[in-house]
Image (cartoon, rainbow, N blue to C red):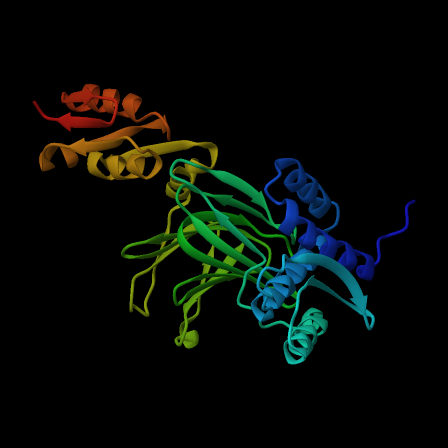
Length: 326
């Protein structure tokens, strides 16, 4: 059995990687090599993040002599580590930067996340997290992931994600959406940020939901139920909706399922996933009911189904699809 890599060795290697990426990060082969190294040990991602933050802090503290190109150096100091750009600095700036870096491994107040995940329109990703959890990230979604010793913190900036949370009672898993908080230990649930509130759907276990400043009204939401938290509302509507949740989360396999939804609602869903938008020519058609299962990237198949089910007409062009009653 091979000897486990020490924390010091990981820190040193992470510092070397930050310096190398600063020089060669444009090279896809180098980026692929870094990705493989990070995947080799869960501790490496955190070490690399700390090294990168330290490097950036030193960059901000540095003042290059006019005409002097930067050189690179990785060094160990006092049982800790630091990665620095060798530049001409005033003595005070050097001391300040060194103090920041040497203390970095013990700091826990950086605002920068460990990982940022973002999907484009129509993109659906399954992303393993460093704690063993899994995030299924829907179209046009942005997440900030921060793993702390006593807390796993996800900031949902926009869009929707489903989380299968690795059990770790010592580190609760909390999703933040504005002032709404969703907390779990080992469970599975989705969170969607909408214009009129936050939708939470639980597929396994139990989560706790509350609004910051109103912790006295924490609500527990169990598997097969959902909660919707409207802006500035302390009371959350919670309803049993097991089959509805299954349909709503079909996007994880690239599908959209409609069962009594209006055409207008179905059109809004399709438009989340496609650059080519569907337009409704009249409100009456939008109120017709829709049943069916479709691929998220096949709006034309949906349009033809609407034609058949509602006796309407679809005009399909390269840049848009128009649905009309006549």
